[in-house]
Amino acid sequence: MDLEQKQAEIIDQLVRRASTCNGESLWPIIVDATSHPSLFAFSEILALPNVSQLEGTSNSVYLDVLRLFAHGTWADYKCNASRIPQLSPDQILKLKQLTLLTLAESNKVLPYDTLMVELDVSNVRELEDFLINDCMYAGIIRGKLDQLKRCFEVPFAAGRDLRPGQLANMLCTLSDWLNTSDNLLVSIQEKIKWADNMSEMDKKHRKEAEEGVEELKKSLSMKGDFGSRGHHEMFGEPSGMMNYQGDGMRSKRRRHPVRR
Image 1 (tube, rainbow, N blue to C red):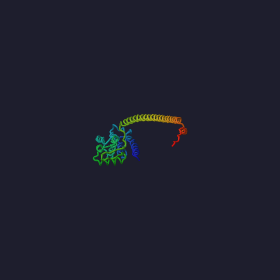
Image 2 (cartoon, rainbow, N blue to C red):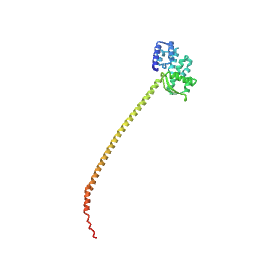
Image 3 (cartoon, rainbow, N blue to C red):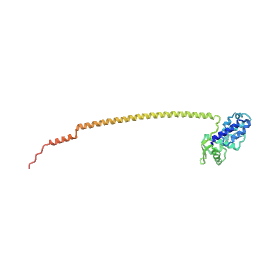
């Protein structure tokens, strides 16, 4: 079973449980959701009316915890630790995993120094153990550890819940991409049309050249025939020349014998 399918089943179970609870009774469900090793999305639980109604009540801190895991990072927790219930070890691990996913959204090459600060890790060995055992083996991220360059290269990372306002930015980005694609398509079509026109012109020029060659061949052939006829008319047949030479030889004066 892949990660998304597993998450879908877990979310469905938690949503059914949370939909029947109110107020303080939601806290155990929120703890279960934010501690579960295979759950990394919380928007369906946040969207429940009885959960959103915690806003402004004495139990609003539960809503804050859920929002922290949906959109926040480990650094956000440290800034607000005084007003948020202390997290369990499983919740701490989960929040650090989510923090890594957030970092990978904007940068596919993550320096070790940045990761150690953001994840509150003291040494490289601890960082690499976390990346391998708690993230890559969990299937939420794929990457390559480069110890020489001290960085983590990330070709894939699972997505998190959309932050408030993020959907509008995504729609704007997609709209810009669509306009760019339309302009590129028009440019490609124009180049195809130009190529077709050039091909037709090339065919036309080739046909004209071939016709010119044929005309030249015909002209040279006609001149050759005319030259051959003129030669025969001027010099006659070879037999006639032999007769002329024969008559000439007969017309020479006979020499008389010399007396001794």
